[in-house]
Length: 337
Image (cartoon, rainbow, N blue to C red):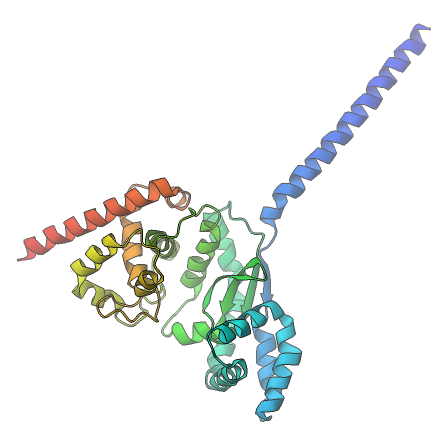
């Protein structure tokens, strides 16, 4: 009787242990699947070789046939983006077919460089992502990268396509804007940092946020690529940008200080877009000024700390950095006279 009782007790414990073990495994699997999504990817979709193949197929064909082939065989590879681009042209009052024809004609002038950039990206992008994640291991890698002909949209960056954020590299934009680059790695790191920074970026629409976002991405790019040139850090667009800013140094800092919290589109355009019509602010000056601010803040903060700062921390530090830069440059100027 005692033996039977002992057996039943042990069997009961075994059942309980088995259930407990099963629950532990199930919970562990659930937790793993929940956390592992951050380690999947990024998923790379390289459509550039397919565009090169399309370009070879339509060689010598009529423009009507080129357009027919484009819409029936190439656009379906990434329909969300190309519809986004067409909608954007329509919104701007442009004829999409006319714009597409222009882009196809321009491609004939850059197809050799386009093919070279495509080969370089195919060889280097995965290694670049690996080196970035070594520096920032908590990067949420659950995102898609599309390497495409962007039809004049961009060289690289995030876009919201079909309600989903997608990382896009436009080979045509890279060919157009990256003249003189010996390496695209600093550029890739710059854009990857935007993806990473979005995990922590404060929710604010002032100029200071764009200044911080672009300046810090440029600073990180330089940290990861110490030998990168100004061009490769995107600080040579337009040509001579940094030298031109220095010629009106005080004006730029004073004007920027007065507009830090501005959310006006025209102020953003003045500091960050090629389309700026401002007569005194150098086009894309915000990239260089933001880089100098990040560099100043980086004297007392690690890159990880800088990436994860809240808006309450960032704005006061930007103001302090601007004051320090202005004061230091004023002292240096007086000493040189």
